[in-house]
Amino acid sequence: MDDQQQIENVINTYIDSMNESNADMVRDAFHENAKITGYLHGELMQLSTEEFAGFVLSQQPSPNDNGEKIEFDILNIEIEGSIAHVKIRDKYLGITFLDILSLLKEGYNWSIYNKLFHVENTD
Image 1: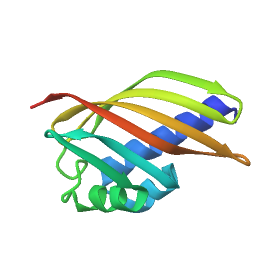
Image 2: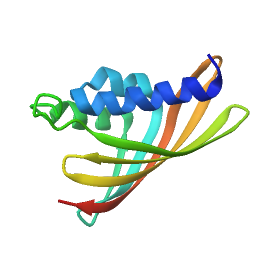
Image 3: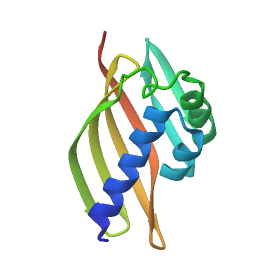
C-alpha cells in the first residue's frame, strides 16, 4: 500500500471513530501527542488526543446509531517525504467543519499529528 492509500485509511479511521463514537479508533488515527484546535461556538478549543477521544466517546448514541452518518470530502492531500497535509470538509453533529490535518509518518505508519478546524456552518 502506498503513502496516499495509507493516509486515506487514517482519514477513514478518523471519520469512522466519530461515526461510531469510538475512542480507540481516535487513538488509532491520531498521534499520542496530537493537538486538536479551533473555535467552536466562539470559544477556542485546544484538545489533546485523549481529550478528543473522550469527546468523541461522549457522543451517545453515536451518529451511526442515530442514522446520521458523517458526510465528508477529502479536498486535498499533499505528501512530502514523512509529512503530509490533508484538507477535508465534514459534517459532524450538525456542524460543517473544514479540517486542516498534518500527518507524520513514523516507520511505516501515518498518524494525524495536528488538527486545525474551522466551523463553516451550523444547522
